[in-house]
Length: 101
Image (cartoon, rainbow, N blue to C red; front, side, top):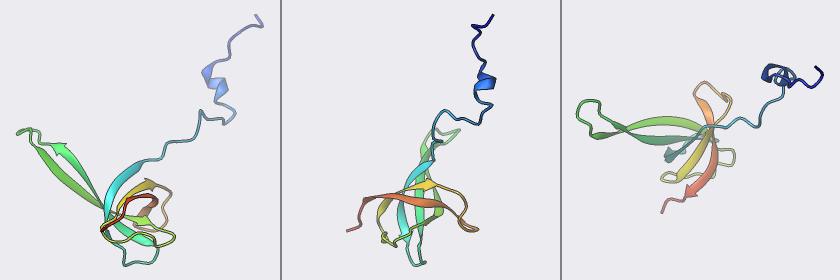
């Protein structure tokens, strides 16, 4: 039986992957740019209350790497997850969606 189909286990044994891993991307507003090459981004999400079924805004503040110090307070930015760059910074700037007025 030389015409056997190779199993999925043997196909991945060589260290080959199906493609590039998808990086996690979030959108938020810059609330601080006072640090060098770092900005603080406020990311908001809407969660439904389990009992009252009303949507509540929940927010998270994340530190993100900004190599060129391009972002200013009030900008709407997209950030992507990366390897830890410091104790509190494991996100980097992906793109500036909208500039602050």
